[in-house]
Amino acid sequence: MKRIQLKLIFWSITGLFMTSCAVPKVASMKDADRLPDPLAVDSATGRSEFSGIDLKGYFTDSHLLYLFEEVKKANPDFKIAQQRVEIANSFLKRSKTELLPSLEIGVQVSGDRYGKYTMEGVGNYDTNLSSNISEEQKINTSFTPNYWMGARSSWEIDAWGKLKNKKLSAQNKFLASTEGLKLLQTDLFTDIANLYYDLITLDKRLKIYQDNYNLQKRAFEIIKAQREVGKVTELAVQQFKAQNNNWLAEIEHIKVEIVTVKQAISTLTGVYGGDIQRGDTLLPTNFNILNSNINVDKIIHSRPDVISNYYYLKASHADAKAARAAFYPKIDIGAGLGINSFSAETLFKPASLAGQILGGLMVPVFNKGQLQYEFKVAGIEQEIAFLNYQKSVTTAFNELQSILKQTQIFHRVLELKEEEVNFLDKGIEVSNDLYITGYANYFELINAQKSKLQAELDLLKFQHENTRNNVLLFKALAGKLE
Image (tube, rainbow, N blue to C red; front, side, top):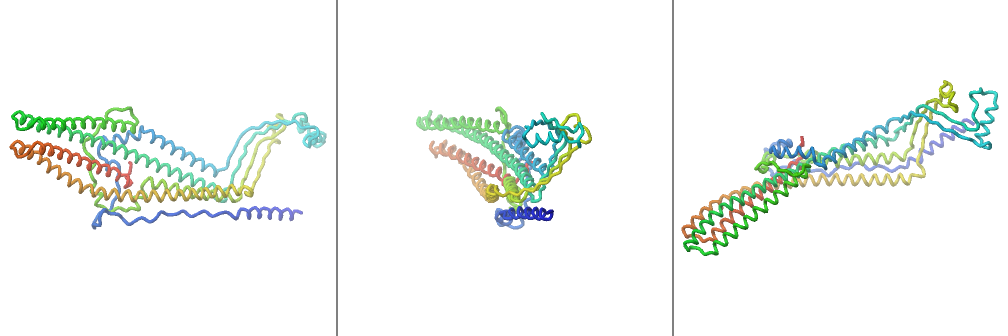
């Protein structure tokens, strides 16, 4: 009989295992498409290897570095991201505890009143009539209390790696959140730097208009003197006045833009307005970077946006493995130790010591449909995570390549525009002399002034665009924040 029971148990367990064998497979983790070989702006040989950049070595303006620190201290978005990292860290710590046995210590008190026609009621009554028990062992049949005090422990044996993969997923999500914080910090620094240099550009633009207005006033004095002696008409005077007013209006409008940019910086740094201390120099081009060979694969995979998406990909792979492990039998071990009695008087006697050991093996059968759906969702999320990772790699590469090429082009454009401004500066002096001597009319004088102003504004525009390009280059090259 005993052999038959053992065989029955053996074949039952075997059947349970077989029902869990037909489980789906987890897709292997994909790699991003291979990146091109080391990238240089042109094909020149003898270039040095790019070794990386850091924040304070790249941005040297003390006022801008101060704003970076203010962003870290007060920006609400940055503080929210820091709290999200703490949440991810809490999930990671929780996942580690799931691998450990649980332990509960406590007290339980209950009471039952059994009917006379129940098995418990009849049994208790019959027990009290037995000669084999003492007075202390007799049960109160009108109301039967139950007292328990002790400890209980349970432990799920992670035979299939479900809990281990959940922990691995939480760990990678935590790492992804820390990289996400770095990405947000980089984006905030980029925004602050762009606004800061916008402000400097507006200062320079204001000065250009003011200087040209003062220059125009000297020409206007010449025109008025010419009108007094009848060499020009009132029309020339009125046209000069109109141009003066146009420039004065531009000067006032620039002041409005300055206020707007200051408010934007104050909002990012989390303060209520106030003046923004600033220098007067735009960010120059770092030619050492342009003249170096860049290991694209190393740089791209150092960027926080790429690293964050890679960690999410690893987390999704671990989630898929955990979802697969749910198809296998769940093995639980439990134990309890304490004192248990149906009377308060005997609760603390040594004879009330009681213990329990139990084990369980449960295999999902009818809920496999739910597990199948959960596994399918985990597989789809893994594919989404890979696509996001591949997208971040592609975006990072194209962004880096584009910025490097634009930086080289801007260098040539700025050289040409600086020469143009120098030519037109000399043209102003010549036009004034020619007008006084009668070899040029006032239209030529006005056009010379306009051309010089426009050339200076164009040069400033390209300098500003080049600066913005250089700001983005810090992010594209995975610049270190510390």
